[in-house]
Image 1 (cartoon, one colour):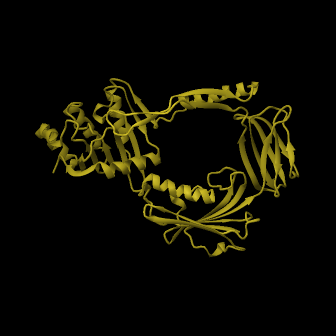
Image 2: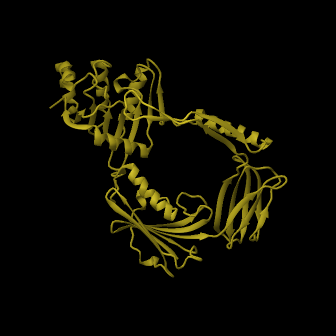
Length: 444
C-alpha cells in the first residue's frame, strides 16, 4: 500500500492510503514542503505492507463506492471503493465557513495536495484518513468505419456489463453483456455522442462511468501583433497592448447527429434559462414597482439570523428621502434578531442628520418596537456595491442588490442571491475592511 501524509507544521491534516497502486514503486519515498501564511505544509509518501484501519480514532466513518470522475475519487478513470474516517476539529485556515487566510494562500494549499495525491481537499477533509481500493477497469471509445465503439480493458475485468449508448440525454440503445473479458469491444447499431456503463461482479457494482465523445474540435488561434506599452492617465503602471486576430478551424465535417445534438442542447438551455429558473436566485424589478419591492424585502427579512445591510447610500439625502428610509426600517421589525446597517459617510448622508429629521412620534414608534436592536455603523472606507446578509450560527445567506435598498422599485433593479463560497468570502472582506467603531442607534 502507498501512504500519503500531509502536515501543517507538526499537525497531520490528511492521510490517504492507496491499495493496489504500489506496483513498481514499492521502494519510492517522496518528501516536499511549502510555506503558507506562516505555516509549513509538508508531504511525505511511503510504502507499507499493511495499514491498520481498525486502530484509527474518529468521529464518524463513511464508506461506499465512487464512480469514475467523482469529485472525491482521486483516480478519475478507475472506480473505487473507499472508507473515510472523519474527524471534526478546528483548523488553522478556516473559522466557521470563512477562510482565515487569503484565498490565494488557501489555493496554494489545495494545489499542493492536489498535485501529489490528485485528491480534492476541502476544509471538511482536515484531519481525516481516507482509504481507497480502486478497481482496475477502464473503458475507452474508438472510431470505426460507421459508428464509434467501446473497448473494456484492465486486470479486474469480469462479470456483467450494462451499457447505454446515448444522444445527449436520449437513450438510443441499451446493451447487456455477460462474462465480459479484457480487451472486449462493444458496438452499437446507432450513432451516439455519449455513453453510460455499469459493471457488476454478481450483485456488486464494481465500475461505473459516463463519458461524452469529442466528435469535433473547434480551434480558435490567436495571432498577436507587435507588443507595445501605453501609459495610463491615472496610474504609474503602464499596460501592454497586444492586438490580436483570431482564426477558427474545425477538424471534422459536421454530421447529422451533430446537428441533432445542437438542437437538443439549445432546447435544454432554453428550458434551463427561461422555464425552470429558480425564483430565489435572481429577482428583477421594473420601474415603479415600489410595492413589489416592499413585499420582497418583507419576505426576505423574515429569514432567520442577524441582518447585515451594507448600503453606502442608505442614509444619503441625495438619493432618498426620509419616507423611503423609514418604510424599510419599519419592515425590519418583522425580524427578531439584531440588525446592522452599514452606511458610507462619503455619500452625502450622516446618522445625525437622519435622526434629527425624525419627529417625536416617529422616535416613540421606533422605541416601542425594539429599535434598540438596530445598529447603524459608519464605514471606515468608501464602498459602492450593496449587499444584504442573514447570519446565523451555522449559515450565512447573502444577496447583492442592484441599487440602494431605499431605491428598490423606483427604477430598474435586481436582487441576486450569492452562492455559498462567494457569500462567505464577500462577508468576511466587508467585515474586515469596512466596519468601523462608529456605531449609532435611533433609541439609546
